[in-house]
Image (cartoon, rainbow, N blue to C red; front, side, top):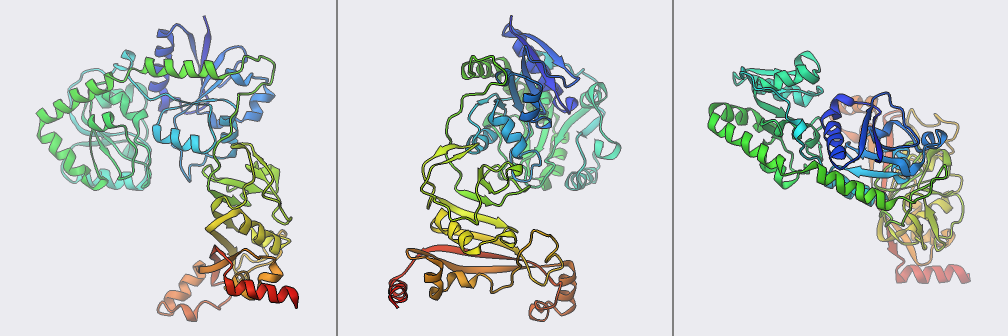
Amino acid sequence: MQKIHIVILDGYPAFKEVILSTKYSLELLGFSVEIILDTKIYADVINIIFASHHISFEQLKAQKIPIQNIILYNLEQVGEGVPWMNSKYFRLMKNTHVWEYSTANFTQLHKAGINNLSLVPIGYTPNLEVIPKLEQDIDVFFYGSSSERRIKAIQAIKATGLNVVSTTDFGQVIDAERDNLIARSKIILNMHFYDKANIFEIVRVSYLLANHKAVISELGEKTSIEPDIKKAICHGSLESLPSLCVDLIKNPGKRHALEENAYNIIKQRDAAKFIQKGMEKYLSSIEQIFAIPTHIKQTACQLPKNINLGCGLDWKYNMLNIDYDDKYKPDLLLDFNRDIDFYQDIDAWRFGKHAGIKGYFSNIYANYIFECVDNMKNAMTNCLNLLEQDGHLYIKVIYDLSVNAWSSPEYKRHFNENSFFYYSNSLNLFNLGWHEYAFEFIEYHISLSNYGLELYYANDNNFEKVKNIPRAIDSLTFKLKKRKVNEEEKKLLEMQRTS
């Protein structure tokens, strides 16, 4: 019998029900399963790891854990600004097998170069039905971390006169204490923590549906939710939650119908079948090589169309990250000070080998990079060569009168509003060596410092009185577009060449 450890590196209360459901499903499939709460990963078993962003690929290798014995079960949202969607976590995912619960996340991860991937949705198992039947003396119960938007929504619901109990008032509750409050509640409220939530909180809500609970949930316009689950809940905008709660409290028949419909829908989602498919794909994907360390078979993935140039610590999962310093683990190690041949093959650790990338990319984002460049001509030429026709280069730089100017020993120059006009001037194409394509200057934007904003408001919002005052401007953002050299410019280039 194959032995499996479910390893929890952090956040067991948040994932408890999914973990117990996973254990139940695996045992139903004939595996021997143990839950490991001390975070230890063993080399001689299959390890299904929760909260895996707390460990690195390098740590697994140092512990001599065979990589083919690792499954990462990702229950976190994939999106910009999520702190653990970094190069460390992606390097771990790239070299192991990943189970992903969300179809939206699955698509994002696949685009980001993770191809050892199985979709393992959240489902139902009978062992989730543990909440007791109690007298319901609470109208609305919310549990979860506090945020400003959640607190405001709770206050609005309380203002309707309903009996609302919320952990935003008294702190987190877990296990039996939480389940007691759920049992006593007529409605369980679900709200997004952030304004821009992309994934419905199925990890939390599935447990409630399996226990015949009526759930009212906020759903944003762009929130990804599976069609069956959408039918299992009452949903609306954040502003509509008070009226939705009042309506369900006033109509117990409607509420009970929602509870039974929700239970019937979640019961159709057989978690054991989801887990079985995940295990079958995992077992078929790993190499049967038990030397330590080993690796997972890799295939090339399509390159993103956007570049994060000079990524440093600002690594972005949904772009091709380029830097000259390997300590930042860029997708591609390149020095833009050099004259680079982009017709040559490249090998990016997330996306594999690709034939020449000249003229491939739609956008290049270069934030606070050109201050450190040694050779501006080469750097701008390399950007031009990488972009497709009509592609855009976005450059963010420190203003030369900013308080941050010359604040780092790595800075070699700073900029003003005229700094990039040179690269769009037809008279300079010959000196730049640009004969087929050039940059068109589109626009630039100015970011004022706090001091600059004070001056701006003090001068009746008159920008012209403020813009040249030292320390008033922090940064500039330029937008340039790649275009073809026109006929007049070709004549000028020929004249300059022969003169």
